[in-house]
Image (cartoon, rainbow, N blue to C red; front, side, top):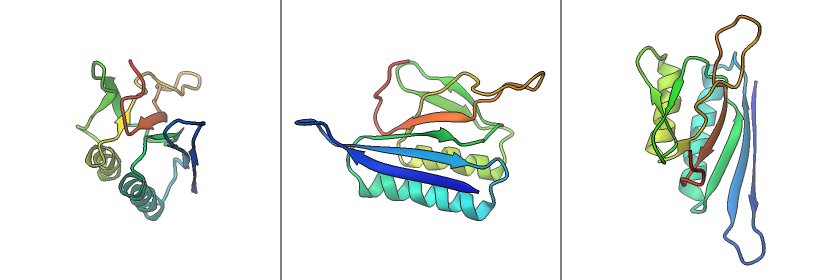
Length: 126
C-alpha cells in the first residue's frame, strides 16, 4: 500500500509552496509505483511553484551521494527497473533529492536511505 498527501501553503506576501508527504510500502505493487510516478509528473507539470516532497519511499537499493550545492545523485548500476524508473522520474522532472546518509538501520542490518527530501529548487544547501 502507498499513500500521499499534497497541500499548497502561502505565508502573507510570500510565494506559494507545494508540500507533499509520501509513504511507499516496501512491498509496493508496480501498479502503485506507476501511480506514484504519474503523480510526481502531474505535480511537476501542473504546479509552477516551489515543491517539497518528503516521505518514506522504501527504495533500499538506491545509493545517494552528494553533489556539491545541488542535492544528491543516485548510483544507478545494479538497480532494478523500478528503482531506475523512480530515479529517472526525479531526473526528467528536474527534482532534487537531498538525503545522503542512511535513515534506517535495525540491528546488524545494512543501513539504507529510505526517507527522502525532494525539492523542485535547491532550497537546501548541503
